[in-house]
Picture 1: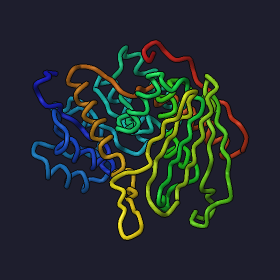
Picture 2 (picture 1 turned 180 degrees about the vertical axis):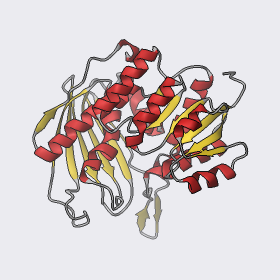
Picture 3 (picture 1 turned 90 degrees about the vertical axis):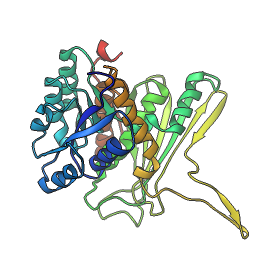
Length: 339
C-alpha cells in the first residue's frame, strides 16, 4: 500500500481490549483508521461501527477480512479463536497484530508458524506490549550494553488487585506469567528451558480451589535463573516489577508510578489499578510501531516464533503447576525465518 494513505484496519474481537484498540487506532495514534469491526456480539459491533465514519460491522471475521477497504487486521478475540483468524489472514497475505496469546497451546501455535513459513515472509506481530514499555526498554538497553556484565538472575513480581470470577488457576500461568515468559526471553535473548511452579499457602483472598499466590522458576539455556511471583488477588493494586542481577551490578524497574508525596509527617504514592492504565503508553507505542512498519511494507516486533515459544513454556508451567516438580520445555528447531 502507499505509505501516504492511512492503513485501513479490521479489528476482530471488540471486548475490553478490542474496544480499547478501536479507540487507540481512531483517536490516539497516527496513520490508521478502523474500517471494519467484527464480533459475534452483533449489537456491540454495530454500536462501535455507527460511531466511526466509514466503518462496517460484521459478525463473521472472514467477511471483515475479505472487505475491499481492509489492508490489515488487529486480532483481539479470545485466544481459542486466534488460530482460525490468523490462518485466514495469512491466506489473504494480510498484515496482523495479534493480541497474546498467539494461540492457546503450542500445537496450534506451531500450525500458525508453519503456515507463515509457507507464505515465505513474516506477516504477524504478536502483542507482547511490555517490549514497548519505557522502563522495560531502558532495562533492555542496560543489559544489551554490557556495562553490568552478564545477567545471572532476574527477579520479577506480577500482582493484580483481583481476578474475574471466571479466571482459573491455569490462567495464572497462561494469561499472566506468559508476560514474564516473553520479557525473560527478550531481556536475556535466550530461550527458557525448564519451569518449576511452587505453591505457598493460599491467601485468604484467593477464590476457593485456587492456589494464589504462586512462585514460578525459569531456567534458561545459558544457566540464568529467573523467579516470578504471581499474585492474582493481592487486593491493593496492580504492580509489575523486575530486577536484573548481573556480574557487576543490578538494575530494577517498576517501583513507582506517579509522584511520591511527603507531607504532614507521612509519605504517600499511587499504585495503578489495572494493566490497561499501567501499560497504556506501551499499548500506544506498540500499535503505532505496527502501523508504521506495515505502511512501510515490513513486519517487526514479537514474531510468531515468540508466540509459539511462550505457548510451549506455558504448557511446561501448567504441567508443573498441576503435577509438581521441574518440567522441561519442548521446542522445535527455530526456523531461519525467525532468526
